[in-house]
Amino acid sequence: MASNSYCDPCSEEGTSKAAIKFCSNCEESLCKDCVEYHKKFKATKSHHLIDLTSILRSKIPIAKSFCGVHQDVPLDFYCTQHDTVCCRVCMPSCHQSCKDVIPLEVASKHIQKSSLLEDTLSEWQNIVKTLDNLKKDRHGYVEEIKREEMVILVEISKWKTHLIKQITASEEKLKTELSNAKKKILDLYGKENSEITELYNVVQEKKQELEFLKEHGSNNQLYLTLREQGKGVDDLIKRVQDMTLSVKKADFKLKKQSDIDIECIGSIEEVRTASAIQYSPVKLQQAQVQPVEVKSLLAFRKEISEKSRIRGIITDVAVTADDKLLVCDYNKECDNIDVFKINQRSLKYITTLSVLGTPYGISVLNGTDKACVTLPFKSYIQCIDTNTLTLEKTIKVGKDCFGITTTGNYIAVGKRGKIKILRLKGETIRNIVLPDLLEDSHYVSSLYYNPNDGSIIYSTVGMVSRIQLNGIESYRYAVEGEAGIAVDKQGHVYVSEIAKSEIQRFSSDGRFHDVVLTNRDEIKNPFAIAFNESCTKFVVTNLSGLFQIYSCK
Image 1: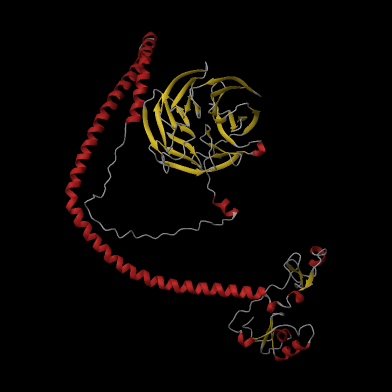
Image 2: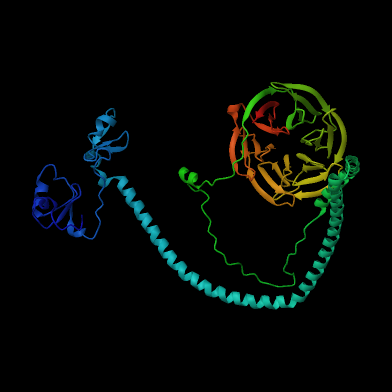
């Protein structure tokens, strides 16, 4: 419009006249005569006219003056109640009951002197000033980077010369050390390989013997051979288990020797850190969700909800194969394991076992009638026969033993700052030092050993983590306070959030999946949780003695 040099009203009548003014109300260019008429008529004399010669090179900002719903009707009114401009057609349908609807001329009468105009102009000016400063700074940064490049290139050259001298002087020493280290490791590998080969040949021989008798021997011969071989199977299994735990992989690492004096000038790197708080629209998040492997998810239906008479704090629970519920009653005045039977619609009390100290964690060895209980104030583990409900041997594990998990012939115990792995006989296999945890820090309160990949999921105050037996952490996520842990057959991890009164479900790689139980399910401050061996029942308890048992499908 600003570039139009002809009068719009005259052009509509077929006359071409030079325009000298622009009416921002009518959005038209006007010639000298039309300007005079514009100033005389009552309807247009208050319109704002702009000298066209001063804006020919500019873009005239034109605000939308017609209704978005009724596109041919101008916006003539302002509703203070809804803080919106509207046309006369909108009035009866949208603003009939509104009290303060005023003409747009009244609403805009003092706009030139309003604080809104001043504040907006000030803000635009502030933004322009800031952007100008950024442009100047960027120009300065470019020149500074060029100067820094030249300086660093010189320093790199000096660094290279210095390093070459130092490396040349120590090269032979390093080669000798490497050769000796290689010989030592190869000798060890040779010895271990001989043992593996010997055991392999024995197993192959027995396997071939059975295969031959199966094809060519009599049933009597095959039967007698099977009985004879069966006597040695357990020993072979134990040897293989011991071998897999004892065999270690050695790696070489080159370290800078202490006698090499290198003055470090720092690395050259560019670091770009995103803002800690970012906004991402929900639809964008949905579009970015990647497809993942679909695993069946358990659904939970409550069958039992009972308040027990346990006087202490329930710190852990375990379910046996015959649906006995073993409960740790963490009460320094009485050292008890309470035993219940899970019936179809009720929880039946069976007995109370008096152990040799205050119990904290408990775990049932799957496929057996054995359970292990930690006694942190006695520094050992108490074994229990879950069939006869009698106490068996104790295993010394040192002070501060809290969470516990079992698998096969092995036990993992959570302590302060580490996890101790040992055999059922009590022999220590290894101690896993936990990342970022010291021995005087929070203890490991809950554990789960995953036999499929040899990892351990554990919880301590404010955190749930997964760690490999070599000490490498796979993932971690924050929780409020302490949390109980349970894992289903699909590898989904279930975490009890005491403060939130909910049970959360995570995928096997540590990503949050969903919340399966909340206070709407009458969950209140849950702590100890457990599945039975078949994952058909899920037990939830809280610190005050509430038992909730769910069927899982």
